[in-house]
Image (tube, rainbow, N blue to C red):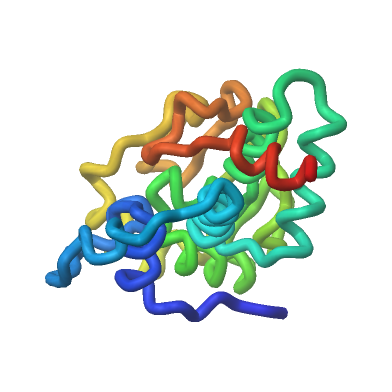
Length: 198
């Protein structure tokens, strides 16, 4: 299994996103405008937007391409559908419900079998949740100091409107499918659609 091990702050600076999007409360001391003098081509802008989404969700090229093909076959705009597909990944849901500090952390917790969907244990980070699904932390894991610490640290984090989270019960219900307006970062998905349409 391939894992992206790029330095987070360096990558965030290059892609123009806040480290807070990645769940990291740090700022780089380097000049944020250092690369803005370079003229970027149309292709470069499109590629950067794709790299941004791949980096945020921790997805490699092959699965990302697969998600785009899925999004293209769904009803509606392909760009909006791509966001829906990426946001409904189990590792992202675990992060969004405040049960992990970062998406990388959430991916590891899911892989280690700490989460259940509708009462059934799932250890696949790319598992896609559906409308009405209930995601819970497994009974054994709830008593661990890891989850108690995480819940305490993520207390102030904004929960998206498509999730109904109950932190006391270590659970969340998907009330509707995620949409682009629920994102905590800027995404120009039409650029990705243009890039893949070439």
